[in-house]
Image (cartoon, rainbow, N blue to C red):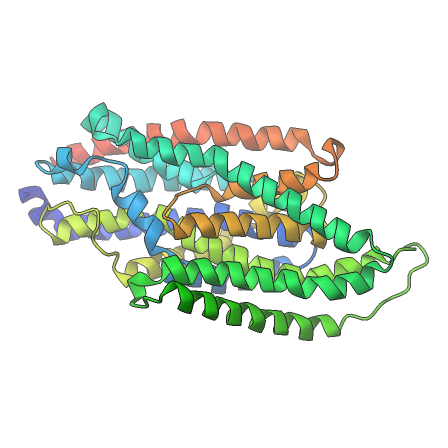
Amino acid sequence: MQIIAQHGEIFIILACLFGFFMAWGVGANDVANAMGTSVGSKAITIKQAIIIAVIFEFLGAWLAGGEVTATIRGGMLDPVLLESNPQLLVYGMLSALLAAAIWLMIASARGWPVSTTHSIVGAIVGFGAVGLGMEAVAWGKVGQIASSWVVSPLLAGTIGFVLFKSVHHLIFESDDPFAAAKRYVPGYVFLVGFIVAMVTLTKGLSHVGLNLTFGQSLLLSVLIGAGIMGLGLIMQRRIKFEKNASDHFGYANVERVFGVLMIFTACAMAFAHGSNDVANAVGPLAAVISVVRSDGVIDSAALVPWWVLVLGGGGIVFGLVTYGHKVIATVGTGITELTPSRGFAATLAAATTVVLASGTGFSLSTPHTLVGAILGVGLARGMAALNLRVIGTIVMSWLITLPAGAGLAILFFFMFKGMFG
């Protein structure tokens, strides 16, 4: 208690610096994942992707980021075992932030789409098991998070497979694909708006003081979905059929219609990602602030201050702008050849999975989800459509992430313990 009272301000300053560094890593690596499909399918340019991400990542982090933050902040370590030595939690969370941020910086430089969730969970488990003892780690909660690393790509892959098959059946196999695209794409636009709005309104907005009933949320989500569909229709009307001798069926025109849809799915994916992955940066930061301000009392249910979510959102945006282009290239063009229709199916599948998980407080990995969705869309076209060498490299980088985060966190934990006593 005395150590926290003595060094409290230093702990908060360090936590803010490391939290911003971690959020930068999330932006450089994970946001690039989220935007990769849109850029890879040539639906939007890198500059447009950055503008979309700046706005919607920040909104997702601020409006719907509170639920998952509670899982990362207080769900993985047993608070009872830390009550007598709360400073150990402070050292540990600072170590976890710094360790995960450094690993993300290395991975982003290599163009590896690793998982920020892997990084921070590995770091927290590492310092918890070695610094506090194996019994301090809530292994049940860790197991639940680990299971999501398998469940989320499978779920996103299945949704992506079904979505792409539906697009293929309804549009590409019709007698007039361009007319069919203009008829059905507004429905897909409505789906994007409705899903993101519904989960955000029902689960994510309680910490900003907006508590709606399920019925109110449903009605509002339908209205938001309809409004976004109307915007899509206006944009779609500008697309005219262009004759091309080499494109007998007019598929290029269909892809231009899907290019409009990809703008909406890019916004949805950025919002979904901000709502889920801001927790990785600000969860440990919120834990440090909570312990310092309460003079050592550990309360996993303490509310996250609004400015902490803003700091996390700002760091994410800065990371994407300065360093996100390398991972965008890997995800957008490396796994399978993406067109706007394929990119749409993968992005909406991933966004749906991430937003659902974020709304239920289920922490998952966005890269796993997105890569799973891209694989699902690729498999809908056959195994030959997949670049297995790039997939192998991605999976290898995922496996290295956990031990790398844990090892660095253990090192920093003992360093902070030695510095502050």
